[in-house]
Amino acid sequence: MSSHPAPSHAAAIDANQPTAETTASPEALSGEKKRLFIRTYGCQMNVYDSGRMTDVLAPFGYAPTDQPEGADMVVINTCHIREKASEKVFSELGRLRVLKEERRADGKDMILAVAGCVAQAEGEFILQRAPFVDIVLGPQTYHKLPEMVARAERAAASKTGRKTGVGILDTDFPLEPKFDHLPEPVAHGSAAFLSVQEGCDKFCTFCVVPYTRGAEYSRPVDDVLKEARLLVGQGVRELTLLGQNVNAYHGTSADGRELGLGDLCRELATIDGLERIRYTTSHPRDLDDALISAHAELPQLMPFLHLPVQSGSDRILKAMNRGHTAADYIAKIERLRQANPDLALSSDFIVGFPGETDADFDATMALVQTVGFVQAYSFKYSPRPGTPAATMEQQVPENVKSARLSALQALLSAQQDAFNQSCIGRDLRVLLDRTGRHDGQMVGRSPFMQPVHVTAPAELFGQVVTLRIVGATATSLAGELV
Ligand code: 5AD
Ligand code: SF4
Image 1 (cartoon, rainbow, N blue to C red):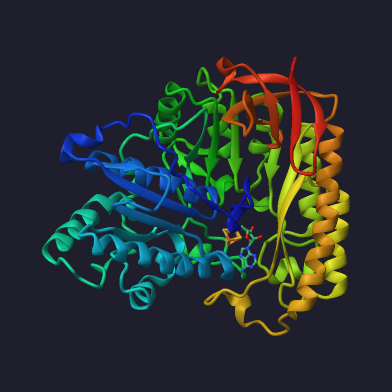
Image 2: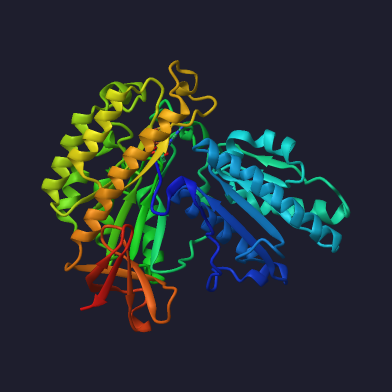
């Protein structure tokens, strides 16, 4: 399951940095520029989808803006993974309703769309509870957004003064994959996401993803390579391959072979100019020999792996339907570390899964001690309607969940801090892909995903440079040019 790098499924990320020129000129078809604001919640898949929605709407005159005020269209790209994540949608909608009404009072309109996994799971309910919403679309239908927007624009024009939204709902799982209908992607920097796989058939008993994102689907190898070459041609140096269960990837190549993720990485590593490859999120069960050996062979494959284990108790892992034991997980980690001794690990954890005893929780703490993680996300179990665990007996009381979460997070933070401190004095290769808060400051990512702050000349922006690490905090590093 997916998460990271920013506090994963909890944080809101604006995928909406104003972009450089897009493939089709925004003015080309409509003659006027309209402002599009997209608020993204959840995983990197949603960040990627928001970027693609921006690309899809560009030829229709929509250009990104970084605030909802004054926008002609607002999309909230939602996350359904935990209860808190989906509650946020309705409070955000409440705020947007006010903006929409203010615009109407000025004789303008604001098309309001809800996309993503809450839309998929609760489409009808959204239209009932928030009738001012115009468009509800699932993750598999955003290529149809222009058509829906055109309908909404027509309805808005014919119904001035209307109080309710247009109420267009499309949460189908079309037979033809949306990727076949999307324009070419536009890079917004030197690091980019590339979606290679979607959906999940694993049915972990706590998780909504198999219901919201549907069955497992892998994009054909050539499509992935084409998109990768295009992005690298636009200056991208680092690609993160995305999938809800990315290492279940099994794409078909032009010559009819089926490639797993390890072989896909081998193909990508032949692209000139692509310096770094990452992938997320993986399932321990699907981590096969070909992928493990890719970590030994490919210098481009970064030595950082987000491999969620969720729990260290075999009893709980079984109840979660994870399909592996704690020992299986540890054995895979050992093999990965043999392939690349530098490999740093990250994970997701759930505490307070139904039936979790003190002994089960101790087993999770023991696993964390054994493996040693450089960062991790941990959550209290949150019952999701329609999932098997939601109706299991022995739900764990809230105060017990909270106490376990604090204990686990203290241990994980200590491990992260120790790892960051151990980086002081090392020379690390860092991709400088963001400007910092201070003059001349830039921020990049180390091979291990740590943000590294440095003062550097502007011409190094977008490059991978070697930095000597001279300082560390609990969550970031400071470097100097070597
Ligand atoms: N409750 C708490 N955490 C959950 N996750 C997924 N579903 C739930 C749930 N119902 C966590 C898992 C997953 C991460 C993205 O979110 O740890 O790996
Ligand atoms: Fe990940 Fe399990 Fe959810 Fe699939 S069902 S997305 S493997 S947590």
